[in-house]
Image (tube, rainbow, N blue to C red; front, side):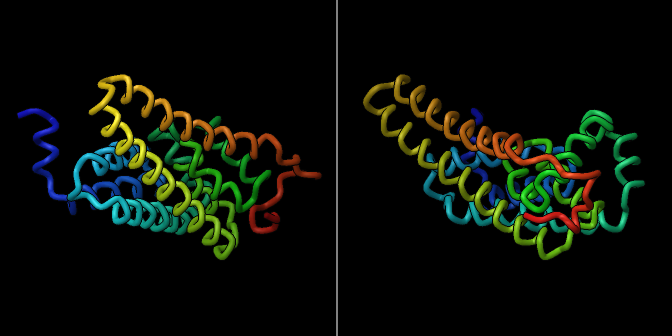
Length: 219
């Protein structure tokens, strides 16, 4: 059985659940390919009417928000010893250099590290747990978490879905040329969002004194 035929046999509810769970676990701090799963599912939704892109976006946003919140609670309870244990078990993702980079981002951005972190793979994994470790006030974390989750998950779903719809229409007229152009448009949109996030990070002023606890930082 071809992959495409197999995907057509998978119930839509299973795809919704898969997207929500994988993105939730990634946001919680487990290094999983949440963005890849989301992009693949949104593209699949553009080709199969059984998958509702709105429901898909809601599931992705919910998984991102809930996962980050659980990660925050775990980080607040576990503290820095938790990061040390994770670094020993997953040095590739939680090594000292990666943790130091994430901490510097939090010192610069404060609560906005959680928002912009959605568009950067490293911060997407660290944002929740690290915000808890640094004891960022939960109300600040929640605002940035909800906004970031909706903009990233909902925006990615919408962009990829419409790229897929356009690609399918073009394929009927221009064969593979339409597909190439549609994919380029989708990739360009995602790269622009990521570049904006990195530019925001580079443009933020350095702290005036030593490291500032996240709880005292201003947005």
